[in-house]
Image (cartoon, rainbow, N blue to C red; front, top):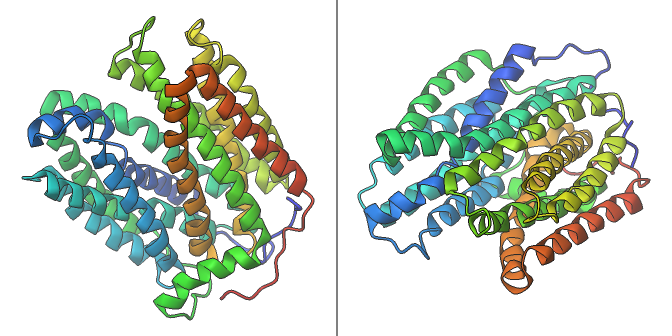
Length: 408
């Protein structure tokens, strides 16, 4: 796979994505994806209000994630069929309604349905990412993807902190009302600032559009390879982060939920890594970025294994792991987007579905291992997954990136 392959865009063509518009998309995408991550620090008060058991209140998060997965499959591909600016606007306005529905939920069933709707519509972040990639020129695509991905990373990191702080001051419902207001303002700014989709749109029915996701996997080798790497690395990420909460809340540290949540801020290194990886990918170094990132992720398990003897070791591990992960994530997307300029929304959907699968497997596997053999077993599992991803990349790095055209 040659990281130096150029895209089919006309060399030297002017980019329709200005730096200001790219920054606006980064902020908007971070706000959109944050809607998925407000709930975890609010689960306790939600359980109290709706009479839900602590053992089952996690279904609120599950409902949101299921909705997000459905959105990736059924909504994101529409970006190849419709004008992405209009699609982003409609998603944003519907998100406002879904967030208000959460804020006024009178029953737990209402809450679950509304949270699922929030998840479906939060994939606007991925439509924005595809739109940024489509507007940028071939030589600037990595930077554009890196900037928007940085916004997504920061949105994820800050969501829990903001939700916890605002929830303590004004109650959990205020979090979703504030999010609805911010989303409404952002919808207006996006509609005024965003240009229409560049390039040709797919001439397909909706049914064939969704079905073409399977054809993309069959025809685009870069998508298959990079999506599998994404599955493995996001599986490893959740193996690290999920049982970490259990370990830190137990002696000798016995940290509170708020204190544990601050560990997420260490992941801001991921935003730095994403931006830097985008620039390097534009210079034809996506393969080098991938290799270095995967090695950093594997090495991060060494200081992670020092817990509970060293809390600083875990902090270093989170910083290193997230830096490596986001760097590889941007390099992956940059290489995948080059293969089919007319199918970037579907490429986003297909790639992110594998990310979602890895993110779903990790918590189940890691908590099972933690309950059986403890934190050392978790680190062994995570290191094995990280090593597998590194070996897989090494075995496929010389495969040709270009795939035969065929999918509209």
